[in-house]
Amino acid sequence: MKNIVIQVNDLSKQYRLGLVGRKSLSHDINRWWFGIRGKEDPYLKIGEENNRVIKGNSEYVWALRDINFEVKQGEVLGIIGRNGAGKSTLLKILSKVTAPTRGSIKVKGKIASLLEVGTGFHPDLSGRENVFLNGAILGMTKKEVSAKFDEIVDFAGVERYIDTPVKRYSSGMYVRLAFAVAAHLEPDILIVDEVLAVGDAEFQKKCLGRMKDVSGEGRTVLFVSHNMTAVQTICNSALLLENGLITANGNTEDIVDIYLKKVVKNILQKEWTKEDAPGNELVKIKSIRAIPLSANKLEQVLLETPVDIEFAFWNFITNLTFNLSMHVFNSSDQMVFASRSPDYTVNNGLQKLVCHIPGNLLNNGGYYINMMIVQNSNALHVLKEAISFEVVEIERKTGWLQKWPGFVRPALDWSICSNEIEIQN
Image (spheres, rainbow, N blue to C red):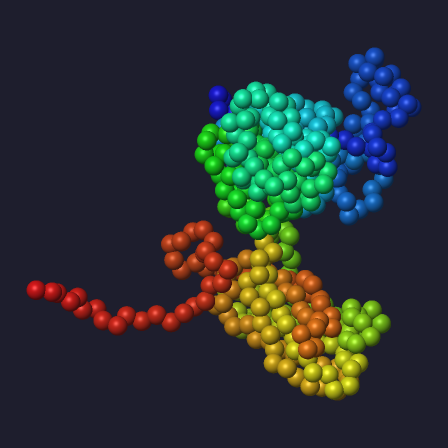
């Protein structure tokens, strides 16, 4: 098809563990011997899946294996997956930073990549010189770069330091200028890795807006991020990588939903002994439980299911005055709400508190909870991602087919005051 700008066929990348490269003299001789006899590289048969949580038996691992996909002109493709799934390796191959072990890539147009802080920048050159250097790499003339220069500097917000060597820039300044150059020098394809996380919230918002503008101008964007809200905001399609394999590819909302359901697991309770409990010499956590108060006693939280959060800890401070702070996050790491208990004064020993979350409050989706024991505004201990659960919607009673918008979904009381229509003469 004429509007396909990236076509990836049977792409694979293999690495040899423990070495800078994947080659050794003995293995090269073996490859040569198999090659002159017209046989396949023997080491392509022994590589294992890129699963970082298991030890494995082979010294070869497939960072990517049998990757196939196409990207259309003007499309914004989100590439998501856990750490180590192969996202950055894929972008490096597409950017020609590294070569694939096998497979092919067809690309139409100029590519500008922002894979890590400072990609393509020379540290000893000033910001101004690096802008012109990157423009030349992209095939632009000095006149064309000059026409965009003021716009780039204004977007990056580094005018005061534009003639300073970039090695003296902070990581935030570095990435601001690097993104501004990559996004404004009119590449046909813009590839952006997670580096935008270095910038502040205001700059990230500007970057997302700029990537939308780039796609609106008919250019293509490949975007890797762990921020699912950003992916859903700007991407019109997405693919999910797991252990070097594409496991899902399609509409952004659907792919993000698949990913979040795999990431968020129902861990409704955790309990420790005094010896292995998290904490310190002041307090130690005994247990935390999410207790669904459903009539059918299922270990499942439905939209209408109230949940009790039960938190127990050992206190080693005499006459401790404390409160508990509970922060509830969704699976996109956005805080949904926070709650603070009243102040209590207790003696040494085991303490237990319960917080009641009513039904018909949380929207369907995954959640996790951070708990904090606080004394006089100082945290005695913080327990991050203490428990996690998914709120499930069994039956939708409206014609709305997508996920209901918003962080919360309270069942508020509505009433009609009058069915009379006032007629003015």
